[in-house]
Length: 187
Length: 403
Ligand code: SF4
Ligand code: SF4
Image 1 (cartoon, rainbow over the protein chains, first blue to last red):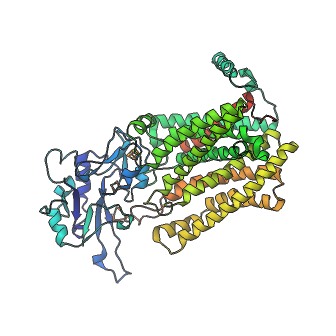
Image 2 (cartoon, rainbow over the protein chains, first blue to last red):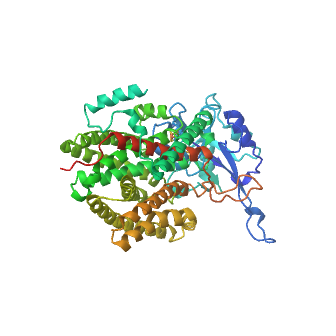
Image 3 (cartoon, helix red, strand yellow):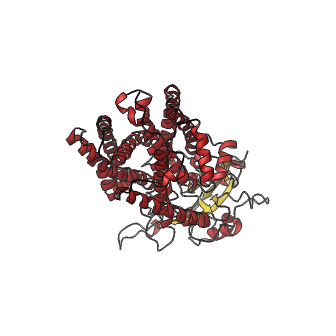
């Protein structure tokens, strides 16, 4: 059984936002600042002028963490949010009643309301678009000019992501909450 | 329509005693300034409700001020406000007619009537908040998310509704044996449903300010406080402050219980704040300090909701029941702020702590202002509650029989 995750070499990110555009294009995410599956966080520079650390200004691309212990799945009253193949957390639009409980429960603000179906939506690792067509990369990975993103199977020791994670130090976001995120930030 | 309604009422009369079965009676009331004011306000509220609900049906959640970062707003707060009132009245009623504390028995029937009315008003509000309410009924049943507190809430509140309807039915028929039995079921399920509603917030690991045991317990406690306030309001209005001796005794006893409950509530609030701030855990402490300095908390929740009624009771030894009616009015405003703040405060702290564009300021506390439509529906729901209460009061015998 595959267990999909993504490793992010986030220090290489140049905040070009090509991934945000590619995601919207590939997955039909509507326009509008509120409607995004993925985003790039901008970390402020540290230090007081003139002692400013240029290296401290980094960008942190992010999206749904595809938690292995996902609070959004736990709180969904109709099982609309569920674990699908590959451990990907998915929303079944037919079952979603738009109670917004998952939006409350997600510690990463990864969810938004999709206007055409009026249901909650989030990153699916392109599993219903590109992966379904047999491709092996996500749209954000394929488009990234600085190769920040590596998507793949964490259970396959030979996959590129497993190799990367085995020899690069990494951290996850809000680890203390016990959500077991599958987005890994490489140091 | 009137003819049909009358026919239905005539049928109902075969099972429960009724004061009136003539619909025209509903429009007749004593034309005192207060009555006219209440009738007029209620009418305006109902019109506002129609406007708000129509806009919701046309524009969906766009008619509301909710956002991605603040998905729950005034509607959820109002829903909680009503169902808390319902549970509180149910508990207060049960003390009298289930546990047979004689001095509190006189309001048993009226309190259950209030519980029913507020529960239905709460359901109206939540119907206008959930994006797909009919889908909810289907998938809550055939695809239950057993780990979800909202699922539990749906099930428990539905059961609660059924039990209190039956309990009310037997109370109206003066069948105390069965009323008591269903009263126990209603009470147990009501308390379960309500503490479970607290858990909807308490279960949120992502929101340290809400996460934990506090809300499930606090919901029951503050429900009882709400129940007492509403009893003062219902009887204050019914007797226009000229209480008969029997009722005076009942209300003094209610005030004394309320005094104790308020003291405990204050104690709860103090420890909630101290534990949240102590240690300075970033998201929890900063949020708690922000709450502590906000006017809705200080003036609404603490002053109106707890301190003023508490002082009235304390200084008069519970005997100032006329003043308590006014304090209860302020108390209900305070209770509203408790619900509103609980929803809003849970969402205050931003989940994404980095800015998303270069020139944006770093994320700060999430802001939310209810839209006009939300305010219309919220006031409208109060109008619905008053109307339903008035109809019940007019056609049913809500005083407990002398035996
Ligand atoms: S990041 Fe949020 S939406 Fe994604 S799986 Fe975790 S809790 Fe769910
Ligand atoms: S909004 Fe939809 S996906 Fe989210 S918890 Fe409610 S039913 Fe589940």
